[in-house]
Image (cartoon, rainbow, N blue to C red; front, side, top):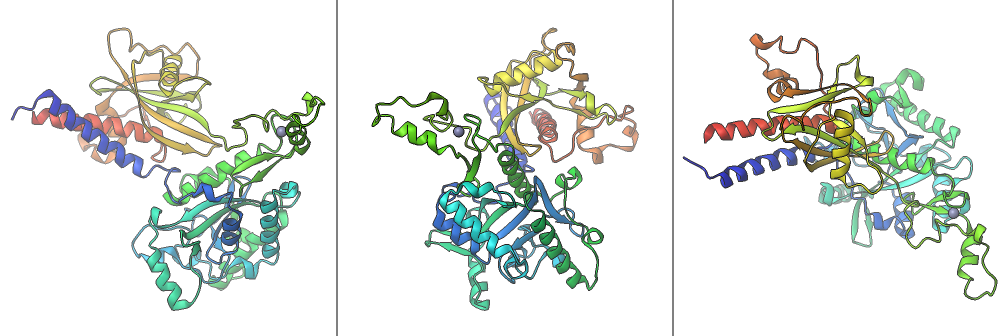
Length: 481
Ligand SMILES: [Zn+2]
């Protein structure tokens, strides 16, 4: 059968789309675990109700480091307000809805309200401060709260199962806000300003473990701690990784923006942690009174941030970086590069760099490719993105296609001197790095230099895999034709 070029192109596009969709579905750190219902952050009635609800989950951080315990190194320790809350996993056995309560030791049968003495007071204080946009929201010793979102039906929760459970046990197992928003609320709490509370939460988890295990170990012996290890960050199960990422990125933003960049006054996190507010009240008053008064406002007191008609410094910030897989028109070659810090590991990866103001993604990608490798790339397509919480980036993943003409493809590392090496590899070689299980015995010495590709959690790996899979699909199609 002879296919027209159009139908061949259609099949290849479809195959590429399927490959990309597959990769996008489970992007590490970027899973849609919660419905963020961001418009409810400023609804103080909703925030109060969800804050005190027995089903509400809390994920604790000390700075950007989440609480874990070593029995479950790939899980966060997530706790509830109330006793004996539903283990989401128990609702649908075999499903991967492991949102903090998997296994006997992960599940904490008792809630914090009953067992951590200061907890109730802390919730009440923060709730009042949040409602009143109180200047003391960041006072010493006060934890910072962030409403993360609702686990609800839009992200896979079977609310009917929870209803059944409520009827059986007579407990409130999920939040129902005005009959419109139903689910389990998630909060991240940064305890770094309160050493006592940090210690008490750690001891609470440790005591629960001891009770379960019938032991009498210290938190150190049980391995209950706020982890700052990338070993943990990169081995969390996929949904836990996204919850960690959301909390860590918000808390990084909140903790590095304690003062207004416009006027230097302290800022406070309002709308349940979703927005920063400049506390320079005098400025606003003099500004709004400007028309009523004949006096000129004192220009020095005007906060340029707060008085700006549209301001973006008060909203959470993400730094955008472009990352690209570079290939040729038939995908038979892939350009990978070795950064200076990966010299010892021989890890060859994609080209990446931060975007500059007033650049399109496409132009930033072309610039980065040229600056780092000397290669001229004409075609750039955005294919996938990934949040990267170290500390607060969004990686924009592109494919850069280089048309070989004897000049475009020439590698030159001398522009910005960031790389130790960059090479055009045959895609068939890279495929063996991505699929080591497919390497035959006869071919086992295919990689004498010990070249490695990035870890599977990274967008770099996914971009390389996509390129390899696409070339493979294309070859199969050509074989059929
Ligand atoms: Zn200000």
